[in-house]
Image (cartoon, rainbow over all chains, first blue to last red; front, side, top):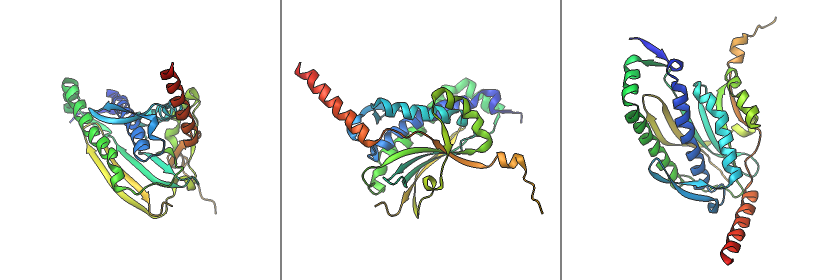
Length: 218
Length: 46
C-alpha cells in the first residue's frame, strides 16, 4: 500500500495544535486539582464540552502559553516523547509527576488520507471525545492521590532528543523563554508509586497519562 | 587505547528539558488575588 509521510500531509501541525490546546487545559486543571495555586484564581469554563477550571492570573497564563509554544515545534516533528507536569515541594524535589506519553504514527496510508480529507470533522470530533475522558480523569485524580505538602510549585519537563532541540531554538528566542537540560534533582523521584489514569488510541495520535507519586511526601 | 564516539549517536541521545524561568510563586499569586479582591470591593462600594 502507498504511504505518505507526516510532512506530506502537514499532519504534525494538526496533531501539535490539538495536543497543545489539550495540554494547556490539562495543566490548568492539574494546578487547580492539586492545589498548587489558590482556588480563587481559577474560573469555571467549558472545554471539550465539560466544565474545567482555568486560571485567570495573567502571569501564570502567559507562563503556560510560553511553555507550550516552545513544546509545540517538538510535537509537530514527533520529537516529544513525553510532556511531564512536575509538582515540586519547597526544596524543589518532585512529589508528583503527571506524565503525558505521546506517540504518533510515522507513516499514514492513502486510505487514511482519503478518510481524513472527507471526514476530518468526524475524526477530530472522535479525538476530542477521547481527550475529554483525560480531562475528566484529571478532575477526579485527587481521590487516588495523597495530599501534597504546603508551598509546592511546578515545572514542565519535555523528554526529547538532543538533535531535536534545534526545532525549538527559534521560538525560545522570540518568546525570550530559554530551556535548559534538567538536573538529576529535578528528575529523580524516590520510590514512586505509579497510578495509570487514561490511555487513548486514535488514528492520528496515541497518548497515555499516568501519575508518579512520591511515597513519602512530607 | 582511544574510543571513538559516533557523532550522530551522540547528537541523538535522549535528553530532558525544562524552562529556565520559574512560574509565579504561590506568594506572588496570593498577593495578586488579595489585590484583586480589594479592587473589586472598592468598585462595588462606588
